[in-house]
Figure 1 (cartoon, one colour):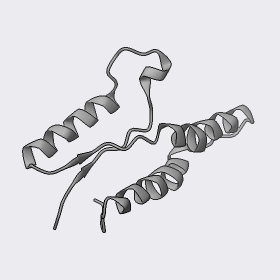
Figure 2 (figure 1 turned 60 degrees about the vertical axis):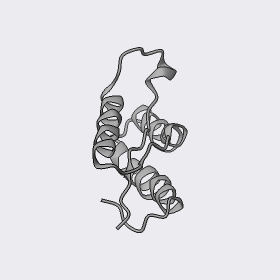
Figure 3 (figure 1 turned 135 degrees about the vertical axis):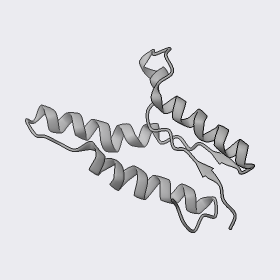
Length: 97
């Protein structure tokens, strides 16, 4: 099998004026180090805009309407099983783990 590493970035702390490295950045760096150690390609697609539009904004709107929305469900539907899958397929992936 031809194995690659993919870490998706869904939130941009720089857009919020943050200077501190968040857990997402540390996770990305860890994934990149592992890929380098294994000698496999590393990809880091950014779905920041999609996450904001399809997950975060509806989550906030749901809270404002008095609901208890679950952003994980929207993230799975719109980001993991849509944006990510399309990106992985464009890279030639047949499977994701």
